[in-house]
Length: 146
Image (cartoon, rainbow, N blue to C red; front, top):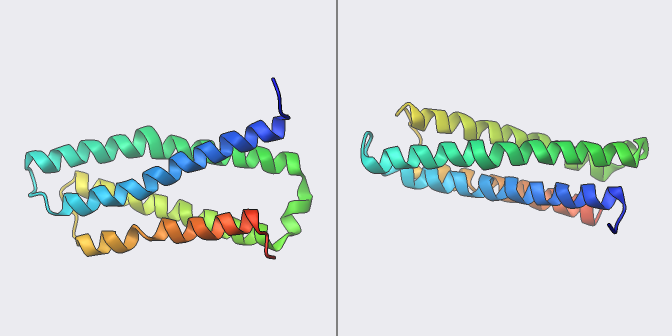
């Protein structure tokens, strides 16, 4: 089997992050459509199932895998990375992405309980947040401007 351990861990980390981000981009789109479905309608109930399955079967496990492989890579790199500016920015963006993940979970519970009070416009705006965070993270990791 070719490649060193670090390369395999990095590959698994990137795969996990891609899956996490795909879900983080798609879930708010479901919320945008769910807003227009009447409470108790078959469409609303279908959205509830889709949202729950997306969060529990893809987004949550992908986030956990991203953290596991990311922390594993970090442990192999050693403590030198902790003093680099790009790492501090990336870590801040990861914390913000995790908080956004938490908001998505809370909003799903609101839909599940038929108590959503947010508009489709709100979710359209919220849908842009992971894109901005992802751009900053990728630039920090690839370019390392600090």
